[in-house]
Image (cartoon, rainbow, N blue to C red; front, side):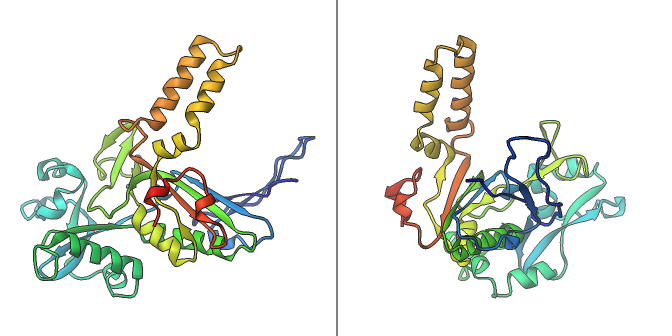
Length: 309
């Protein structure tokens, strides 16, 4: 049987196309702009996202004496350099003096922005639970929040995870999703960073030329996916997932092949080490597993059973 292959790049429109001129007639590839465009099918659906969620934009907020305010990008005018905003100006682990040479700077909104009003208006259950978690962990005032506390939220990431949950829950034949990315199982204050030619740079120093990325909040993503109807499996590290799936045994099989040279064996070992070593990609990268309600979570391989709730 042929496989129906679909790619989703959220918010970007692509034409559908297949590979032509091949006598083997490979399966047609279909592009989608949104997960909601994937309709229910009578075959299981498998969704794989590798470093997909970290590319979505984030909003950063700071709790002030007047409530939540959003970090915004402003022109770094010399006339304003004598009135820096300590909280916003030191974002991204850089000092005010470093930002004084940039064309742009970070400031706090003087009034609630549309993002503040929509996200903190009490209507979004995932955001409400995230804020409640921050209050519980703070314990420094009657509300649990103190001036200077921050939140980094990616509404589009949460919306995508909710859509994935709906796709899995609405597919009659069931399905599952594997989302592999770097991040944590809690909400952070500021993980936004920029890279240019494999070197980390200030997020405002190479505007339009650097790649921006932020850690994934897997706890919020799991809640959003469950809101869409999916079942969330226990979050595990990439190293733990790959070891549970037999990467060590598979690499050993490849090394033992008569055709494998010493150089290839060493390359295989070092590649595996980079993927599973906690000091490299093994711990920072996580694997979020999701499945349809009709799928037995205990039958999904690769996840730690003792941590399942």
